[in-house]
Length: 212
Image 1 (cartoon, rainbow, N blue to C red):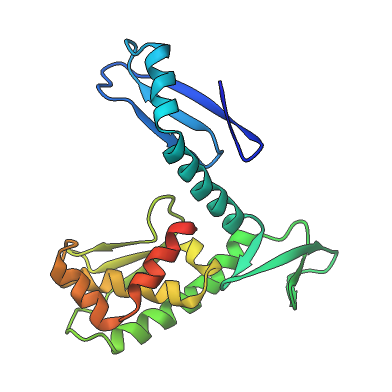
Image 2: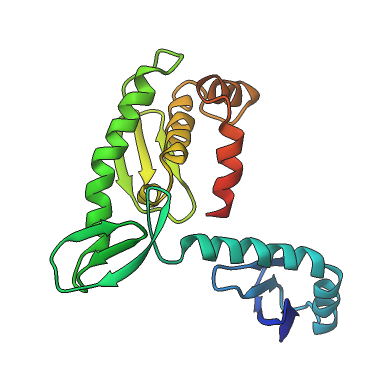
């Protein structure tokens, strides 16, 4: 099964699960339209659901296409570079190009840069934070569904390594978000007010990050 949108065919994958009560439609990173349902749902019902929700599905496709574009290629601190492979060791930047060896460990390099920058930005935002909070320990790792995590009991903030690819303003927003959790462990109105006190335009960055 396929759905045609903007002259492209998008595969429809049906996944039936035992005990699944409702039917859900989502578009994954591979740009597949995944329908999750139970074994009793008829193909006619699935086709009707897809037809009745075509506009929403197309919106989800647009969102994933934007995310795919924003994550394809080499990014560093908010700028995209064209990768040029060469025999030189290390990494060299030049305007919109980056020169690297085929054997260069990009992830290790990203992590090395992140350790320095993330600590600098954590210290900076901690010093100007509007509330007295314990100084948190920093951890960095790759995460697939979160930009940051705050362990309130241990005062550990974990930041997503992928933030090294983005403009530093997004990094600052995530840090302020997690620092605010040291006061409010939920996402209450008071929590968002504290985030706004420390970053008045946080809504702009929060909205834009949904496209990454």
